[in-house]
Length: 65
Image (tube, rainbow, N blue to C red; front, side):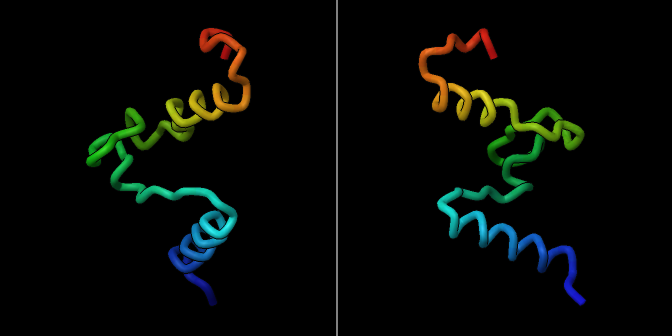
């Protein structure tokens, strides 16, 4: 049987192999070294989402998202 942690590590490795960068969850938590969310209930990392949308759609004004 596989544990939740083992599954998570396998998935993270797949993402890295696909060219994605990963971040350590506690580091980007609201009380972490580089917070990217208000609390653990905030599922979507808004800053990362907006940055990706701007990269994909550079001519669309930021306020349109």
